[in-house]
Length: 78
Image 1 (tube, rainbow, N blue to C red):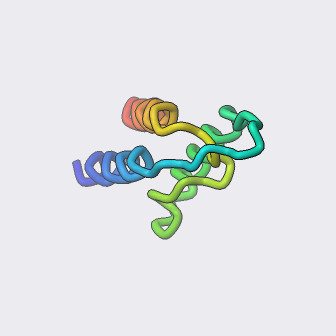
Image 2 (cartoon, rainbow, N blue to C red):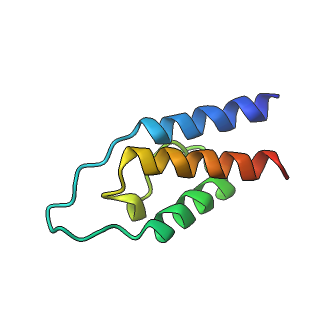
């Protein structure tokens, strides 16, 4: 149960983080962002969890929340 609580806390912290819009007009690579989030979670480094991966710069909060939920769902069904 503690693991589930910890996972939820980490994912909510990621969702709460907001990104500034990219001034260059380039669209962020959403697949790279999700992959970086999954890697960050799977690596299990406490110091890195809850931080927005560099690959997610420019990704909106709604998309980040969706990825958080998908990663959480994948981890809890294993």
